[in-house]
Length: 204
Ligand code: SAH
Image (cartoon, rainbow, N blue to C red; front, side, top):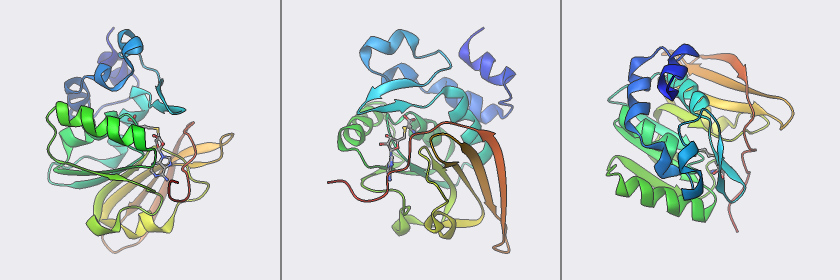
């Protein structure tokens, strides 16, 4: 069974998400010595003590974000750029923020080589979102704060969704916050997860 059949069996029912994941060459986002493991359903190290997320977790997060082809999405924690690539397949415009400089540079290079032109990059602290391009139809966060930063909620469009791991290294839940059309919020905890902490503050 290949990775994508496995994802479908594990509950990824949104065909758009599965198709987008098939189109993105994950081996381009991992270090050369790990390329033969790129299609295993596992996180892998990418240097600077960070990891490329597990394919299932990426797929779940994007499925919860509910892709819309004309939408704008904020991706916090660019890392390898893998999730940004899948988002770029699904949304009109992707805004991605990474705090670790070599990772930011590496991701921008790979995504450029793969021909993505609908991604904007920022090096810096994404814990306050990226207000200049708000509001977003979706905000997807790949690192865990202890509590949801209010900036993310503020920068969500009506009807938009925030998908974010919340908690400590020991106890963390993937959380989905939906901002309804009238501005009220609906929050759901969807699964226990294990992400690196969201760093608070600017680099350097
Ligand atoms: N989406 C990535 C997953 C990377 S892991 C991928 O597909 O590969 C999470 C990333 O969040 C790490 O690269 C880490 O450096 C970054 N990060 C942590 N705190 C951050 C912050 N405050 N702002 C931006 N990025 C942050």
